[in-house]
Length: 407
Image (cartoon, rainbow, N blue to C red; front, side, top):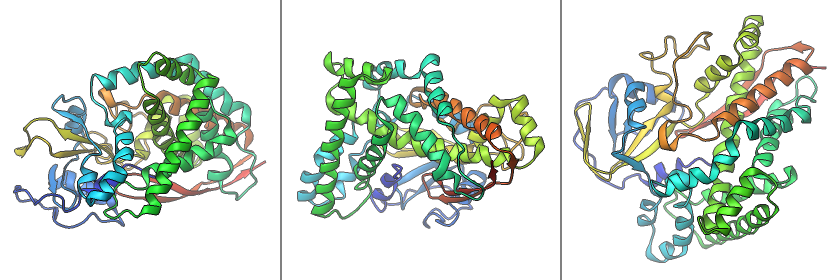
């Protein structure tokens, strides 16, 4: 599994440090890899707009700033192009088709192309389609594992894979192949050295993913497949655009949904008060779990023209990282932000906002409620759930989720 945080690594040492105001956070040091969220929190409290030379990026961390900038037309989608400049000439030639493919991913697109893609995707995220996908998960019978089993592999990830398979219009048994190909497609991003073997494997993964996507579109087994397939036939999209859509949905939806679901399940199992909270306010409970999880830590953008934030001048072309995780932990917005609380009503930014907001947010919420309902229905004795998290600069995901599911 890969998050596009690799683009952060690829920018290291790419540009010289900028002059910035004195700050309490040491901007010259690397991220605290053992506590990246703590690093982001420190930046938010002491240096809300921070230039970090090692990643050649500005980090914006306070909620109000992130909330506003997510809609700011001066910020455009970032580009994978800078990655090429770090590579020797022959490697640039070999990798160019792969970077061209990445540039088609919706998260790298600006208007008007991004608007076209979103219109094509709308049929996949209607209330009726979201309900159908959630019903696929419900019929599966989620919690079949015994006490002490790893719920991550026994229940949570399979449920999310089933939902995404239904959304994409592919057979559930084929979904692991999509994950493998997607990982290989992202595996070369952020590396300063790329050998011929890696390039070969990545090109092979792209070829296989392209062939598979063609079959999925031809079958038209879901509204998404039918809409994207029609767009390709009508030449609104190219085949490579369709493959990019499928690849981004696989990489951008599976693990974040699993992470939010694990967070919600852990909260549900902390005692009767939490279960009363869920019973009374299921939508609010899920909303708070997603805020607490914030699986993708940031939304990277590119300044399209010179701008100034909190007195810091940001030149056109600079990378601007809107830190969603820090914003969702901002005490100015959320009292006691590290606590799972009932009654929070304010919006958060876990799904982004504006033109690049996650279209799958409604799907994620429905999947979570379906799985939580199944857990309560199928579990006799509810025990605390323990999550072993892996947390990086760019995202967090569970390595294991263990607890009582006694039948």
